[in-house]
Amino acid sequence: MSPPNTTPAEAGPAEIPQRFWGKILGSTPVILTVIATTFAGLSSSEMTRAQYYRALAAQHQAKVSDQWNFFQAKRIRGTSMDMTATLLHSLGEPEEARAETVRAAAERMPASFDRAAAEADRLARAVEAAKGDLGEAADPLRRAAAGLKTTAAGLGARAAEGRAKALSALAGEGGAAFRYLDGRSLPDPEGEPAEPAERLREVSRAIRPELPELLEQVEARRTERQMAAPLGRVAEEEIARAIDAAQTRAADYEKLCEPTNKALDEIEALVTAQATLARGLHRAAGDLTFALGAVPPGDGKGLTEVRLAAAALLRVDGELKERTEGMSNSVKAAHVAYTARRYGREAGYNRFISGLYELQVRKASLESDRHRERSVHLFFAMLAAQAGVTIATFALAVRRRSLLWGLAALAGVAALAIGAYGFFDEVRHALERVRG
Image 1 (cartoon, rainbow, N blue to C red):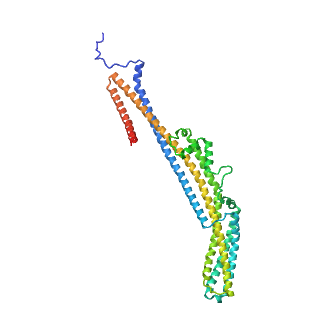
Image 2 (tube, rainbow, N blue to C red; image 1 turned 30 degrees about the vertical axis):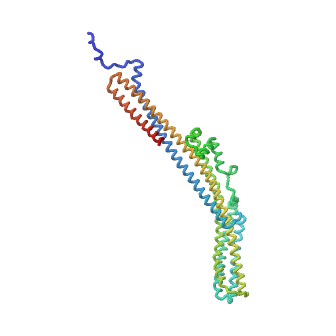
Image 3 (cartoon, one colour; image 1 turned 90 degrees about the horizontal axis):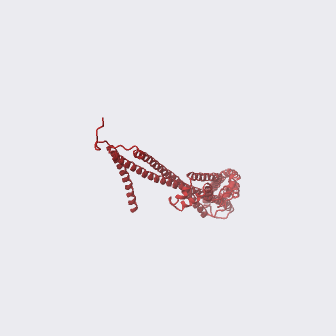
């Protein structure tokens, strides 16, 4: 029995011929969907990496700020030390700080106090012999002489202890440390240039020849994009190695200076202690000066002996005070000048290291921009794939006359419209910023 005749209108939707191009048409939406999904994932990944490098740049920027803070703090302290040295020079012309001067002063100190005690005893005997001529001035002079004798004896014992400490310090690192109080010298590793910028520039050049030139561009305030080409040729690991090497050099220099710093601190403390002892005797001598004002006039033998004994005692006091204070000012002025130079050297290390960190900031920022641009490109590629999916879906909907394929195509159009709106909205804002 033959099948009934059918008209084309009564026939169902035409099937896609299962030839080569038919298979291509049927599989195109699936393939493009896979491609679009891949591009979307890659775009999201690139944006995540862009955000990571932006956060990394912020971390490096914080390290740059730390190094600049160290630099500024040391420069400020160095400037303060320079001002202190200038003030000490204005109070008197300090002599050159030498170990021999400090050693001689320490050795003479006990003898000077013994001499003061002997002169005070002489004054006490002269006062006792002339108490009839002195009248009411006898008791103040007697108390002043007794006080000076007791003070000188006590200070002499302390001076003997200080002499032992000073001789011990000068026999060790303290004596060698005086060579840095000449107004020029600083501790330096043998065979290396003095300035930190020079030695660190050579270290960084050994790691990567372009690094010193890039640092000069940072100091010249070149922008990231202006430095993009040469900076792109330098690996992050190479900058990190340069930072590690510079940090190690800075730490080694500080460690190199520690024995000298400690020795000079000890020497300054010793000479300050000597000046303090001399001031103790000078305060006691003030009572004698006040009591002498009440001595009656006259040129009798007793009064003359009192005046001579008092003058000898005050002369010992004046000489001791002048000598110890002059030596103390000389050592302090030279010490603060050395410290100012040392802070300047250490600040140079911090400045160089901050430049290396700045290279890390710029490289991370450029890397972030590169990944962001790749994310944008991959996003557009995803949109193009989605457009292909939509076109292929339309083609299938038309060919099959299927409502579901038509709805899928409309969904694709809506997705493309939303993406296009976001893109053109960003373009509009960019144009507004340019016009603004």
